[in-house]
Length: 256
Image (cartoon, rainbow, N blue to C red; front, top):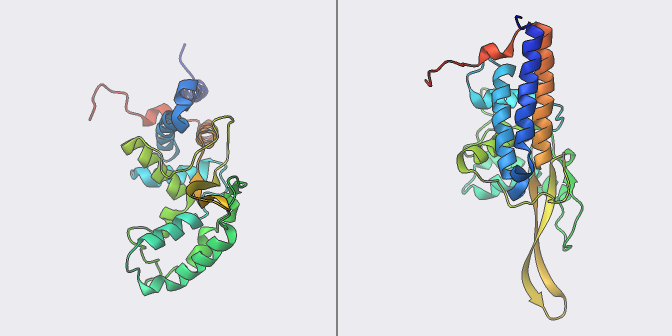
């Protein structure tokens, strides 16, 4: 019996669900979920082809799939901590960025206060400004486009841009960016900022002296959410269009 279009689309969804289940198996959730995250990003890469088959630029396709086929409402926010860190790292930053630098410094101090506690509540991404708010302070060229900050565009500092950077760290270096640590005891499904404490000294009166800083965390459960949401959305897209997503993938014996 000939397989119907609807059956092909169902098979596409079932196939990817099987891959997702394998990606998050117990052994792949070790090492801060590094193997699971890499495999989930690979599945998401594949799904992005079905989402935007006419987009040849992988990064653009990847980020557009996040924007259009997931429920992640914070993807268009800019990470204040990452932006602040980048600006501090650049030597001889252009005076054109003075307004942005001052604004970011004030907002970071206000929204991410440093404490002396060993344990602080995590902070959600809703503390970060949307890209439009940042662009209001970002220097613009004569043609109305933003200036580059070192090698970075404003878009690179949005959370969808950082998710793409995270994917590249996994794929090309097999490591996690940053120094944060997700919980080893429970599934966490939303990104957050975590205050990290490092013991720098021992005072005879005050005891342990800590150096605290904030780290951005994208937990394994969040990667799982992104992939499952995109699969469900793309499945509905093809059911509506009555076309098979399998047609977009080369299944010949040629490697090139």
